Amino acid sequence: CVSIFFLREEQGTISALLFCTIIFFLCNYLCIIFLVVKMRIVGGKYRSRLIDFPSDEKITRPTKDMVREGLFNALGETVFDSVVLDLFAGSGSLGLEALSRGAKFAYFVDKSFDAIKVIKKNIMALDITNSEIINSDYFSALENFKTKNITLDIIFLDPPYKMNIIDEIVDYVIDYDILSKNGIIVIETDYKVDLNDERFAKVKQYKYGKTFVTIKRRTL
Image 1 (tube, one colour):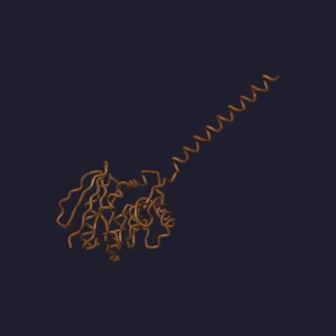
Image 2 (cartoon, rainbow, N blue to C red):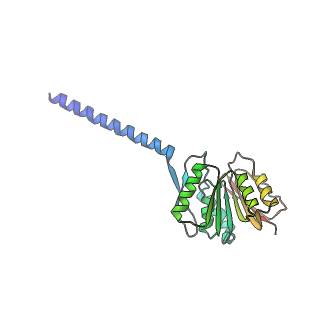
Image 3 (cartoon, rainbow, N blue to C red):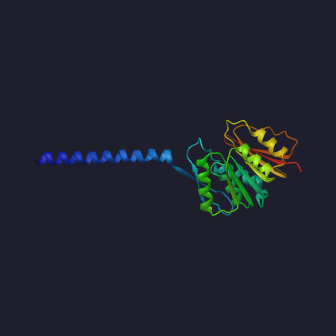
């Protein structure tokens, strides 16, 4: 009888351990699907504040801390008091970084509703009031800026790498004077961008791992 009692107790312990193991792996699986991952702002008044971005790479490809720090160091004081556009915003990290470093106003554009939800959450968490979120494709947003005669000082252009649209966007913002006369375009790609463009007075390119960051300042 004693042997049977201990056998049943041992079986119950094994069942409990098995149940806990299944729950543990199930929770981890759900986290992988639904988790919103944290990243940090690297400079300015919001420095070290955590912001969210969706873990799904189909929604966004977040700019790494090292890349953001490098490109904003390259921009320097030009960010201060500027009007910026974070096109293909994803989590909004570039626009948020600009606001943290003294930008006057930021527009966030993304066609993904999930990305827009994350941007709204980040803006609320940082108590930001000098921004506008636009749930739209890139071309409709640019047409809206043209119609409203909105001029931008800095445009962050980080489209999905498979989209071959950088030249189209650069031409559009130049042709319709959406980019200010001394404006800057920051382009993030996985390849070298052509640096020969007489419309820009100064062009610099930086490489961070597999990422290329090209900064083009428009001719006055």
